[in-house]
Length: 269
Image (cartoon, rainbow, N blue to C red; front, side):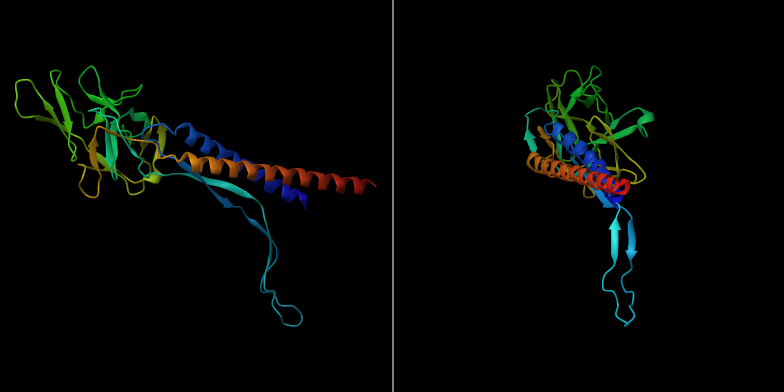
């Protein structure tokens, strides 16, 4: 009946509304360094079986197909795309990008996770204690903690994550720290908490910490920043498709409502 059509179209509107929210968030972060786009995954719901395939008639012939009516769709999850964004040459000593797999590890509040979060955003700064921190409003400290001497005149980060500084009284650069990166067996299972940060979850598995360039981890590139991996063209195409699908489901609801009104009018006669 038209009631089933109303319910199916209603589920479609709800799912498409979620898709629209995900697309809008992707487009809003098209210029956010290190941002990872997400996509919405759908699946169909249960089916009403009105005729079973393979049933034999009086002559012994089998029904070649069945008769099933679906009950709509729903969103099963949002899948994060962890493909690398394009590198941007910034020229800043504390801008670092990961060329390959891995995440920077930073310290967060214990209640947000296990005390650590992971990010692809390599825009760093130095706080009042000389520590390397994220260059955002929270200033999350990079882990392991690296302190830059106040009188350092030059800072260099090599591909393996070693941090060197040039001091006035020394001819050769001095190593003051080692940047480590983390990898996950299923990064798509990580939980986003904002600030371009992710925390581990049972689905992501535990982080494996190590130096860049080891065990299939990416290497570091100084003075470059990873851009957002959002493709505005594809997002706008998905936006148009979602809008059209929303309109079609709205038309289904309108048609089902008119059908029910016609049936109700005829019954009153």
